[in-house]
Structure formats: C-alpha cells, structure tokens
Amino acid sequence: ISGMLLRPDQLENLEKLADPTQDVLLEAIMGSGKSEVLLPLFAQTIADGEHLGLLVLPKEQMQSGGVRLERRLRDIFEKEGVQLNWEDVSLTNLQAILARLQEARTKGQVVWLYADQLQHFFLQEKSALQRHFSGDKEAIKALPVFQEIRKLLREKGVALVDEAHLQLMRKRECQKPLGSKCPLDAAFREAACDLQLLLLTDETICKRWFFQ
Picture 1 (cartoon, one colour):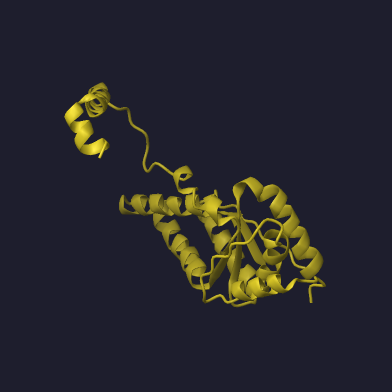
Picture 2 (cartoon, one colour):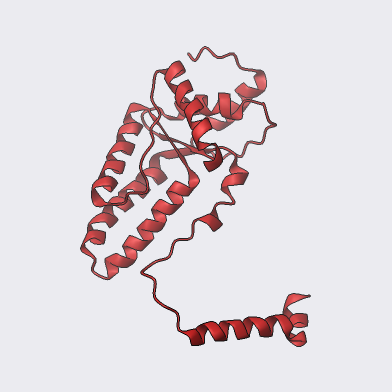
C-alpha cells in the first residue's frame, strides 16, 4: 500500500504499535526508522475512521519533523495531516476544534501536535471551570465544549508520542496561573525571606530535614 520496504524489526515494531487497546513503550536506536517510517505508517493504521490518530512530536522538532510527516502522509497516503490552533479558547474556536477533530476521525486524518499544546489547553479548561463557579457567562458556555473535546480524545484518541523522554519533562514548562495577578504585601516577602534564611542557616533544622 505504502510502497515502503520494511525490515523485519520494523514490521515487528509496527505490529506492536498497531493495537489501539494496548499501551506500548518502544525503545529503539537512532536510525531505526521510528520517526521516518513508523510514525506515518502507525498514523494511517490507527486513523481508520473509528479512532482518532494523534502524533505528539517534540516541540524542538515540530517544524522539521512536522514538515517531513506532512510530506509522507501526502505522498504515500494522499492525505493531509491536521494542525489545530489550541491556544485560542474562545467559544467559536473551541467549537471549531471539536468539529475538526470529529471530521479528522471520520475521514481517517491524522492530528499532529506537541505535548505542551494539550497541557496548556486543558489548563485553560481548569481556568474556565474556576470562572464557571464564579458565574462567568463565557466560561459557562465554553466548559461543555471543553468536556466534549476531552471525551473525544479519551474515548477515541490513540496517540503515538515521539521521543517520549523529552515529553515527560514538559510538566515544569506548563504552569499557568489561575486568576489575575495581585500585589504581594511587603510583609509577606520579608517573612518568606526570613523563613528561607532560617531553613538554610539553623544547624538543627538542617541536620534534621536536609542532610539525612
């Protein structure tokens, strides 16, 4: 179908990845064809009209890797990859995201993104939930759409995460404050500095808590 010639180890790895009911961690050496061969083949195997195929790429490789993936999907399978604007969480764009994900699933198209985008997206959902309880009308309208997107990804989505070790380090980059900023009283800053100084200089505290 694809016109690709695969080595036996690549066929074996593809079979491992092709079962959407199984969670698989595949470790392979550089040059074994993970990104260039297995990703596009996996994408078309999973994107079968029932499941939603998701390719999660490292942010550092989004441009180069995404371009190569797009070219392979187009040249081999005559299908376009799908990229979405996850940053815009207006009600109109949320509805557009949901509709495009549903369309991609039914048409067997592949959605590619990087992990930060989904993490930031669902942090926005948490923010909307907080504003929902405060009576924010826009959040009240947006929250059900957030939930529909989450349900679709959870029930129909199958993701292949490239360079998984890089994605596991993203959590620290995805901290989003909830609510508006407010000034901090100088007394709190001074108390925090005094506490830090105490923790670092008091021998009893250091011996008991830090150097065991």
